[in-house]
Structures are given as structure tokens and as C-alpha cells.
Image 1 (cartoon, one colour):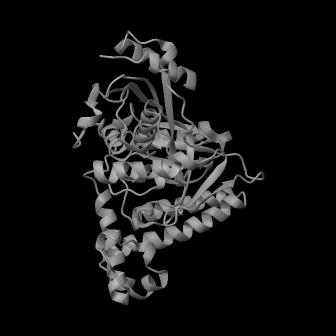
Image 2 (image 1 turned 90 degrees about the horizontal axis):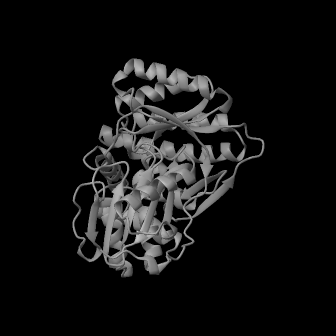
Image 3 (image 1 turned 90 degrees about the vertical axis):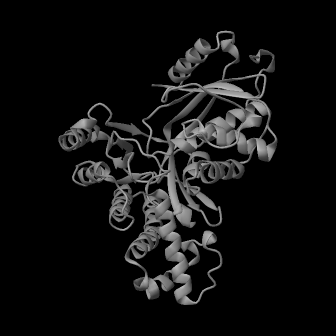
Length: 412
């Protein structure tokens, strides 16, 4: 479905809910999804990561409300959600919490007061491609447009982390939103989470043709209440223990990350860690090395080597990080045995959701047939929700804000 078709669908829905609006005054906000070929599960430890934005994402059609209310309808979830921006407090444990969190923090930090009416749609199934960060960014951009607020890339990236960490309760890092804001088409984003410094590395002109395949398991994931926060705590515990074993100043537990612990310290004292902490630390340090090698492969135009390194990342996610539902592990296994796939791994937290793969575009049909047949033989219950999508890299979210035409505000 192309951009104009999506916008038309959203505009029609918006007009059906609010029949007094003029279609000429409908505005749009878009944020792409992201994939991370290597650099999995280490952004919250302030490691180095890589990523791309892709040409699918969250689109929002909206109009200013003319008051302090926001109302939101999702084409992916049930129910119209609404709230006075000034009254937002605790989360309500539904899909609109990401909107409430964005509105609350924009209110508290920047004093916004003007609301909007919107309809939201995602162009891929939910799970593993950072749809939550994309929703926050698309909604925050729309609120900024309505309130005449211009934020920097850093402010948006920090806003998303604050929403997820402090309002939603997920101890995530900055990988997702950084990819969705900073990426450029045909460039690999290489980001040092510790310093915020990043490079956009252009695609080597000698690189073989490739597409990015997104293979959805058919099940959705929820970070809160899953093993996600436990894994973050295990990594912090490994870092804290290694500092204590080595005589380093270990400071406050909540401020501790493995990026502060040199690899030589891990080599010397890692065997003293509880097994689960040691395995999490092993994933971190080996993933940092994979990121370095993956960046070099991209620079050299070697998509096959980058794919192999991405497979290594997936293997470590299973063996050391101990992520992966049975469904995702099966997809990962099938991908490793499928001709035309250069490499890939879990996308997102890796407990449900999807896998990503770099593929030879000339073999798309054969790849789709092979993965679908083998996966549904094992998990036939997902035949109606399983899917494979082929996409390209894309630019991150554009924050050049269009000013709304205030004369057509709705007042209800």
C-alpha cells in the first residue's frame, strides 16, 4: 500500500468520526520502523549499535482539537481513547499509554496545552520493529505541530526513552528511536550510545543487491511483564559484580552498565559471576565485537559477511542472552538453511515478534515459499497471522514541522 493510499484511508476514517472537518485541513505525521542488523540487547548498557530505518512505519492523520483534549483511534487496536492533556497522570495499561506518556512529558517539559484528534495506522504487524517508539515519535511530532514546538533530534530521542522508561516501565535504551530519527536511506547508522556520537556510513557501490525481509512469527510481544526487564537487571548485576571483584569504584547500582567495565576485567573475573550473569555479559562483549566487524563488512560492501555476523548475533541472543520464543528460534533456524538469505537475527527484544534477514532479491519467491512451508508445518496455528514482507532502507522521521491552519480547528 503506497503513502497516498494510506493517507486516504486514514483521512476517510478521520472524517467518518469527525464529520465537521474539512479534508483540506487534515495533517499527517509519519515515523518509520527500524531494524538492527547487529548490536542486539546492548543499547541499555550504552554499547555500540547499528541500524536502518525501513520504508514501512506508523502514519497518523490529525487535526487540531481547538482545546486541550486529544482523541485517538487506531486501525490496529480497538477503541477511541481520549484525555485532557492537563489531566494525564498514571498509565491505564492500554495501547494509548504511549500517547499519554508523550503528551504528559511534552506538557511537563515544554508546557504544551493544545490537543488534537487523530487516526493511527501501522503498515506492518506489531512486534519486533519498534512500533512503540514509532508511535511515540509520530504522535509527538503531531503535538509539536499543533503547539508550534520545534524539538531537536536529541530532544525527541530522549523524549522516547523517558516515555518508555518512566511512564511505560520498560528499561529500554536509545537504539529504536535513534534509528527512526537519525537514519538515512542507503546508509548504515553506527551509533555510540555512551557518547551519542554517530556515523551514517554510505552503502558501498560494489555491494550485491539485497532486500531486508521482515518475517513475522504471527504472535505479538509485550516488553512489560516479559523477561526484558529481567535481562537488563542481569546485565547490570554482572557489571556491578565485575566492578566489585576488580576493585573498581562501583557507585550506584542503577547507574551501572557494562560499558563502564573493560573487557580485560571481564576476562579476568567473568568466571566468578553466576552463570546467567556471565552469559549475559558474554553476549554484551561478543556483540560489541560483532558490531565492529559488521561495520567493516558494510564499509567493504560485503553484504554476505554482514549477514553472517548478523546470524552470529542471533545465535548469541539464543545461547547467551537466552531470548527467543520457540517460534522465533524456528524462523532463525529455517533462515540459516535457506538459499538466498545472507544472514539475519531476531528483531526487537526477541521474545516474540519477528526476525529480519538480508536476502538476494532475485530469490524472494523461493525464500518466501521455503520459510512459509517449513514454519507453518511446525506452527500451523499462525497461518492467518504469519507473514513475510520485503522492504528497503529509508530516511528517518522528518521534523521540519508544517504549521496547522488554525481556522479549521474542531471544537467539541
